[in-house]
Amino acid sequence: MAKRGNPNPTGSKPDKLMRDAIMVALNRAAKDADGKPTRKMALIADKLVELAIEGDMAAIKEINDRVDGKASQPLVGERDQPIQLMLNAREILKRRLDRLAQAHAMRSDGEHRTQP
Image (cartoon, rainbow, N blue to C red; front, side, top):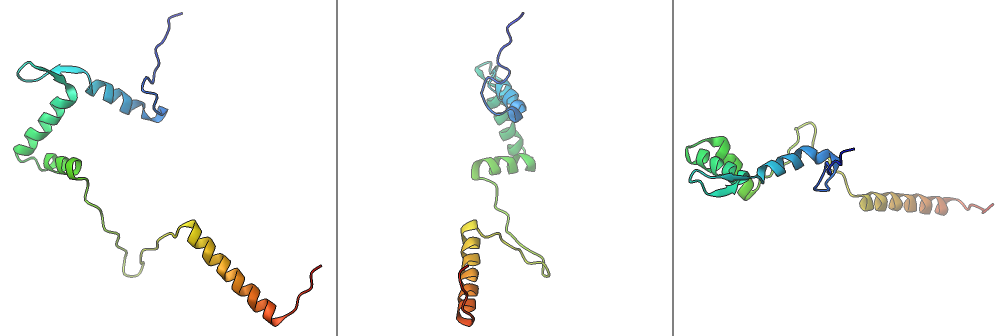
């Protein structure tokens, strides 16, 4: 029986198998236009920069997104449907406990309850 290698040598999650395969391929040795040793990832980066220099807007945008980070998208709602934000669990529980305490205080003021 032939011994099989680890199908996921990077140890990452199984749902990242394609990412792992692409990273292996990008890190393979290659030669640049001058015949100097490099990695395939460097060749792709060089090509992206060349396209941007030639005015390719998609390449320019990709470089800007990678270098400066993607521009944040503002949160906007419709006029008749404003944005609703989820409060964190601590704030929700605090509000509920406050309401329960108020209801209990109102009940205690209006009636005397006996313990069973």
